[in-house]
Structures are given as structure tokens and as C-alpha cells.
Image (tube, rainbow, N blue to C red; front, top):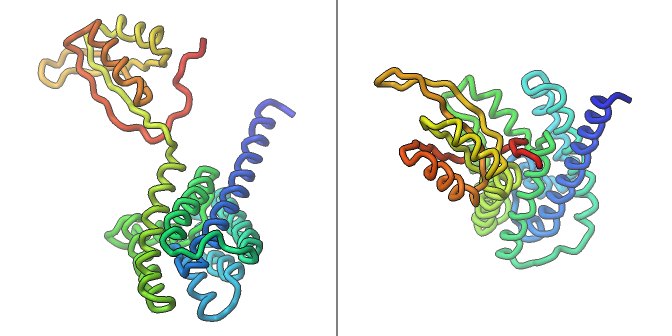
Length: 283
């Protein structure tokens, strides 16, 4: 096998393992913390739990049946890989759920179940997203509806979830609906943390007349890759070079000190970066 084929094989295996582990973590949070306390999640999972309560047909069946048409619609729009990864993740979710629902819940306290359940399912969804999959067909429907409505994908998903979580009050009780909203909020925060990473990364744009000295200092002192962008002043129209690099939150102060020691008049623009690959100079 060539190096490229070995690399692709490793990438596929890592994605499959991520989908396997993410769906297992999500199922554990759902079946061992939320469901025993009549707390549900949003999206197709929430609908499946409501239908399970109304029909007594297993959640493991509903989650596949309800997600299937959404992933079929998303096949052409989102691509084959995304649809296959999402379908695989949902099948795994159904499998793990059938196992965890036979186990004793970790807690029957609704408050503890909501807090820990929200954290755990958020971690599970975040892992699945990082592995290129999805557990919720309503997101795909929101993407398909975006161009036909004045609302964004996030607004459409939020509307669906508020309706679904509110329905828990009619099927279970209103305490369940309120706890479900809390779990949904905690889950969404954890998804962002896991999918975007725990480290706080900053992008830095540096406008300086001493770009050579500053660039060399950043490369040798901070071990950072620096990109030089060619620009032009907006008023005097003079040519300027802009330096761009990415640092961690803890390295921002050192970067400022390094730049200002070389050029006290330098202009720095520092902003959040969600995800970074590479960029560090290795010794």
C-alpha cells in the first residue's frame, strides 16, 4: 500500500472509532441519566422518545425509522460520506441504546440526571460531529429549508427543538419539559467545547514597518509559523506587509511583548480561532 492509501485507511478507521465511541457515550447519557428521569433531548431523538412513550415501540426502532428519510434527502445535498457516516452513527446509537436501557440508571434525581446527562450527551454528539457524522436528521431538514425560508439553519433547528422539548410537557409533565430545556442548553455548550476544542486559540494580524525583524522573532522565540500578506494603506496608499500567525491564549502576552519590543508603533488585531491544524515550527 502507498503512503496515501495507508493515511486514508487510518483516517477512515479513526472516523469509524469516533462514531462508535461518540454514539456509545451519547446512548449512555440518554439511557442512564435523562430517560429514567423523564428528560428528553431535542431533534429526532426527542421525537423518538416521545413516540416510544406513546406507542410503547422501542426507541431503538424509532430512531432509525425517523432518521432514514432525512439522511436520504441529505444524500445529494450533503454528500455520500456525510450521509453514510450519519446513518452508521444512528445504527450504532440504536444498538447501544438497546443495551443501556437494560441497565440500572445512575441516578433517579431529576436535577443530577439533567446536569450530568446534558454534559455526557453533549460530549457524545461532539465526538460524532468531529468524526464527520450526525445523530439528528432535523439539522439536515433545516439545511434543505434554509433557502426556502428567511431563517438560518440555527434558527430553524432551535424552533424545532423548542417545539419538541415543549411537547415533553404534554407527554410526561411540565417539570420534564423544563428539565429538558436545561439539558438541551448544557448539551449545546458541551457540543461546542468538544467539536471546537478545549484550547482557546487566537489569530493575530500584525501591521508593522519592521516585518522582517518581527517575523524572525516570532519564528525563533515562539516557534510559530508566520505568513506574510501584502496589503496597502487605505489613506496614503503605501504598500504594507501584514503578518499573520496563530497562538494559544497563554502565548498572547509573550507575542505582544515580542512585537512591541521591536516596533512600539505596530498595530495588532487579535481574534478567536475555532480550529487549527499545524502552524508550529518543530525543533
